Length: 384
Image (cartoon, rainbow, N blue to C red; front, top):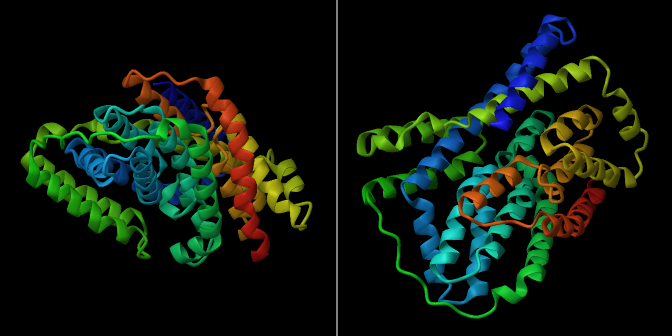
């Protein structure tokens, strides 16, 4: 509810900026043209992921991973890490934080294991693994219009950094929870599925959609097609699973308002000092300065407004834009509000009756963020 109120307030401010001439109408139209495909993708992919969860797809995957691990805790944890990586890369970080977190908690509890090492992996990887593909993060989708060459060019630019970010993240997660990841367990029985044809159909739709997201099509097209087909099948087999809550209203309002306000601030020249500082040098260290600014901004305010505030200063340079994405995607590991995914993750854990020590979260994040961001930015030095 708080997010919806903030988003509504931002949207009102943005509309007022248009009405009072701060943001010219043609600039407002350009914002709308830019954000509509992005929000269309976010809506469609959320509907697909939420329905897949409701029919039990993630539960079945979790139980399969438990059996595949052959009762070895560290192997199950590594398999959960792999699932979180794929989920984040193709279905976005919010899907991992919101939908995968309760699944891995349930898998851990069903097998008599502590849930926090598994849940902590999902929230860190939801952020740091969101550098792989344009569809992995809303910031990536917003940046895509400044990067030519589509998905292939994006992976070529950020792929090495994404790989480093994930490897460093996994190493730190293991260091944090290594004592609780020892030993063995007896895999629990597979979950009961109410409608197997519906489950199989959801699995097929997701499996077909994933490669199409990186096929060169606009991401919203395969996501929307998958959502329409899955909604149609669910309405036939189990209409009670459908509701308006499938649509991420809060995120849509928040992102729309934020984009309008950021565009108004840029039009009014409020971001010129930031642009002057970040454009003041073409030296190699500037890559780290931009990534650091993104990390700092994300942890002080939030990664989405931090990206929108800093984007005009670096949009002309693909290398600096990539550095900004590293900062705002992989850097939000310290404060609870640094990314929406972290807040949603915490909300889901609370609903599962799990308390998180924010002090411990912040301390580990303060260690991880500089390491992950700094090391992930290094490959950009060879692309200058």
